[in-house]
Length: 305
Image 1: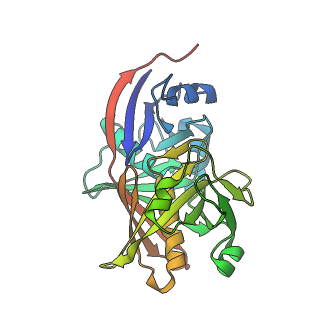
Image 2: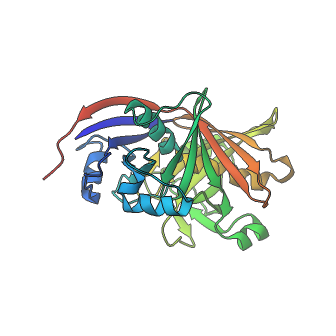
Image 3: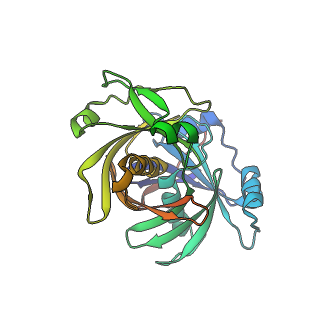
C-alpha cells in the first residue's frame, strides 16, 4: 500500500488515497500503522475516498445537500484516531488532507481558492492562503449551555502535575473538548500528559482535554494570544490539535468577557495557528482555523494478512 506521512503544526498523519474505495482498514490495522515503534507512526490515519463510495460519505453528502460522482467527486476525509477508532473531525488533519489531495492530483487549488471537504462532523470548506490553508470549522457551541452560562465552567479536571482539580469549560467543535485554564507556563510545562486527565462528570463519548495559559497581556493590537497543550482522546498527548485550538480560543474568549477579541494566535508545541471568529445573523459564531501543512515523505508498506 502506498502512503504519505504528513504533519500540520506537529500533528502527524498517515495519508492514504483510495479513489475506488477498495481498502478495508480495520481498527487493528490502523493501530499498527500508527504505532511509532512497529508501524509508520502517527497521531492518526486519514483515507481520501470519494464521498459517494463510502457510507459515512453518503450520509455527509445527504446532510450537506451535495452530489458526488466518479466524474466530479467530492472527497471524504475518513479520519481514524491512533487507537483505530473513528473520529468526527480534525482541524490540522483537514489542512493536511487538502495538501495531500493537491499532491495526489485529485484536486487543483490556487491561492485564494476553496474546496468543500466532507467529514463525519459535516461539511468543511478549505481555502488556500499565504500561511497554508484556512479551514472553515463550522460553529462552536457549549456542550452544556446552562452550566456554561451560569459559571463559565461545567466540569472538574484532574491531571498528573496538578495538585487540585481545576474547573473547566466544555466546548463542541463537532467533537468534544474540555478546556482548563492554568496560571502560568511553568504549570503548563510540568503537566504529565502521558496519563489521561480525568473529567468529572465524565462525557459519554470521551473528550479531548486542552490546558491553556493566557498571554500577558492577553490582547495586543486587537489579537489575543494563548499557549496550549492537549491530550486527545484515543491518541494521548499530541503536538497540536486543530479543533482543540479553536475550542481553547473560544473558552478563553468566554472567560475574557469585555476583553474578548475575534482573532487569536494559539501556540502549541508544534507551532502556531490562527483562529478567527465571525458572528452570524442567528447569534452563533463561525470559526476559521489557519496554519501550515507539510508532506514529509512517501513510501510503501505491506498490510498485515
